[in-house]
Image 1 (cartoon, rainbow, N blue to C red):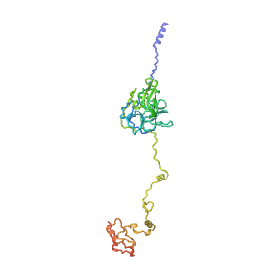
Image 2: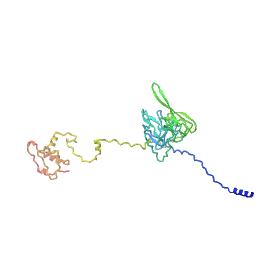
Image 3: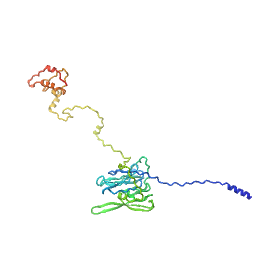
Image 4: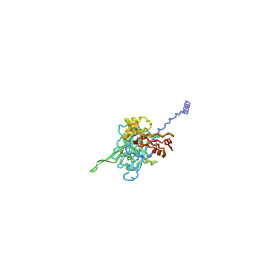
Length: 396
């Protein structure tokens, strides 16, 4: 009995059935795609507020660009922000002289509205002209991206005016800011990975005998909760509002802006949905009808004295001649040149001989003068010389 049990134990122990274990692979870690290479350009700012455009995704985080010393006291720091050129490209910062006296530089405008970005590029403003934000009822079509451009993430944050996030931040996050804020104010702020950072304006009111109730924005305040910053710390700092002073502050992330490949400035972007220029206004009434009639070539008609197309007044003698064509003298219409061998007819009551053609020679003119008729007072007809009349006129 024991031997049978032992044999059964050996039999069971030798038949080992192995079940294959399920291979469990770890879940892939979601990593943000590498940002595309930055394109840096010099953009020529317009001399008035450009038309707003709608872009389907948010501008990238700001880049670091330290301004050099100003070349002259009245120079303005222009650029150092993202502009739209079929894609978000970096407008390289540089010092510029105002194009006209008392012109002021206006910072670019970014607004989050309905999941898209309403963008107005920076420009020069005439004195006394106030910036006008786009109306809420304005409907804009989203601009198409350039060929080969991969759209980025939509703006992440509350609706309203904003500036791009600090350098090194998560793409798509926007920083709410008042209208007229320079984007460079967030250059020295820590990068953010969530929504929560915002910019507030510190307003200084000046009241004295010369200047009354003038608002002077000298600095702004940037605050962020610990849940928004990449280092998990609360942030609060006062930053100069001037763009060249804000860009000169030390940055937490050194994301340097590349130099433009060309010094030639590019023109501001023109909306692909802009309406074509209207044709010039057309005249109305009889002028418009006459313009639509086909043009027919006509031969020029002779203009008679005293007619509607004549510029010279009609003489009384000419009026009498026109009234009685039979009494018109011979010299009013030069006769045709006679053929060879044909005598020239003379008019007895003519006061002067008929004029010869322009091609007649001097000899024929002399002969015509000698055969002039006598004065009409003698009552006799002039005598004709048959021999001279029979001679043909000489032609050149």
